[in-house]
Structure formats: C-alpha cells, structure tokens
Image (cartoon, rainbow, N blue to C red; front, side, top):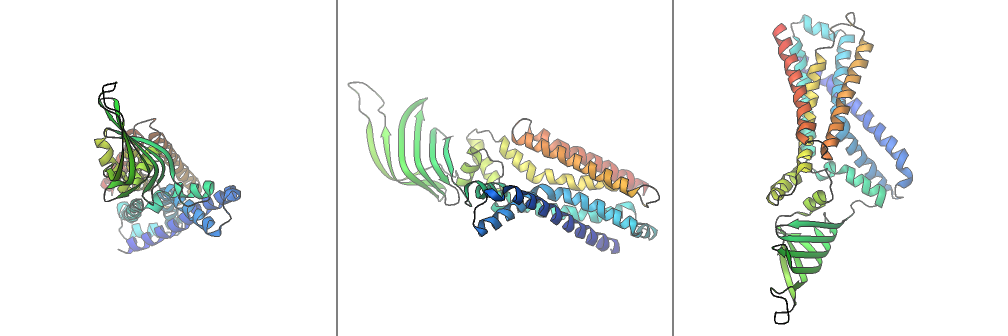
Length: 356
C-alpha cells in the first residue's frame, strides 16, 4: 500500500506539471500567432485561450501521461526509491500497477469530458472567435435528404435550435411533387416545427385537361423527426468533433436514412479507443527502464523513451486524421494500432510477471 500511495502521488505530480507546461506552451504560441486576428473584446480573448487550452489538452493529455510515467520512473531510480521497494519485496508488476491504475482513471475522466459540448467542440468555438469574432456562428446553405424529402436550410443556429430560409422538396418516383417554403423553423418536442409555410404542389396530371398547380398556406407543420440541430450541423458541415451523445444519436438516425456514417464511427473510435494506447504504452516502456543508473545511461534512455513515445503518438495522430478524411477505414487507422500496442503490453506483462 505504501508503494501505491507514494508512486501514485509522484505520478500525478509529474503529470500535472507536464500537462500544464505543454498546454501553456501551446496556448502561448497560438496567442502570439493569432493575436492580431482576435477581437478587441477581453472576454472573447479569454474564452479563446480557454478553448485553445481545451483543444490542446485533447491532443496532449495522452502524451503527458506517458511522459509523466517516464519522469516518475527516472525519479524513483535517481532517489534509490525503486531499489528500496524491490528490497522490501515488491515486484516489477507491483510497481507498475499504480501507473496503470492512475492512467486508466485519468483516461476514463478524459473520455467523459467528450460528453460535454464545450470540450468536444473547443476547436470549432475557438475558430469562430478568431475568424468571426463571435462565440457560435450559424451554419449556412445546408442541403440534405431525409426519407423521400430534400431539405434546404439557408442558415442553421444549433444552440437556438432554429433555422432560417427553409425549403422542403418532396419527391415521389424520382419526380418532384411538392415544394414547401418557409422563413423559419424551430426544433422542439422531437420535430422541426414550421409556424407559417407555403406549399406549391404539382398536379398528378399535367396538360390542358389536367389540374393546375396548387398553392396553399400551412400553419404548424411538423417535419424531420428526431433530426436534432446539432446532428445537422455536425454531419452536413463535415465536422468530426462530436460529443458522445450527439454521435450515438447521429448513428441511430442516419443508419435508417442510409447515410454514410464513417466520420461518426471515426469520432467515436477516437473518443473511446484511441486514449487506451496510454496504459498499453506505459506497460511496454515500463519494463525497459533499468533498476539502477549503473545498468544504463538514464539520460540516453530518457531521450529514447520520449522519442519513441512521440513517434507512436505521431503515427496514431496521423492515422486518425486519415481515418477522419476517409482515406483509410477507421478500424485500420484507430483500432488496429491500439490492438497491436495491447498485444505488446500483454506480452510484456505476462513475460515479466512469470519472471517475477
């Protein structure tokens, strides 16, 4: 129990220091680069730096956990605490367990943060402040299909759950049957409600003896059941920063509409699968660390461990980007690398556990 508290405390300490330093570095560099583009409002500048910090933590938190493990292990070696623990009868797996437990708990909290809108969409919010000097800008010119309807929204306000300049085109047997035009629509109670609309309906038979075009006024039309504003904003704008809830809602709805959901699956894999590489990489690197500085040059080892970590993280980051762009399947870009690291960690764990 002594080893758990001692190692976990120092591991958390190094993690907080490294994580804070990396985030402040990224925020500082970004602010110096984009300060001329930011609005004059002090509140918006503070919000911008907060969202850049969220964005940086999303990218750097897994990396910081591995760096903290390396730093903690080097500290234990230099202070001779590691030799003392081994002398008291602790095995290598006993020393490793606090690292795996703490990193796993932090990763779980990290995943839970992606259930919040502010954290998951920090990149989008910071870009809006920098480019448009506003917290949330509407999406424009959305054109999509839903069942047998083609729908156009001139402007969509996801937070207000409101759309402007609405056009609905109803199609039957590949022929246009009706067009509904409205100034605005509001999402409530699971439907998009149109208070006032005008419909232009084509007759079934055209000709001198047929019916003419029918124009009617409508009140309180309901359409697009369960098609939430955030789903529209994310899917049809090609964004990949989904919250957990929005991603599952989008999959449930779009699977029925036979819409490609590769981007959404990639976003979910990034949230749930990608962070798991941290405890696996911690296990792999841990067993290569020497017991004493007499057995290996610690500076050289630290350099090699950090370089290897950056290489693994860089490759995974590149594969995630390729999966988001549908260049490669998300299963190959995200799940496969993490599974390979899992096999390596499992081998290391079993190998050294048997030796212990």
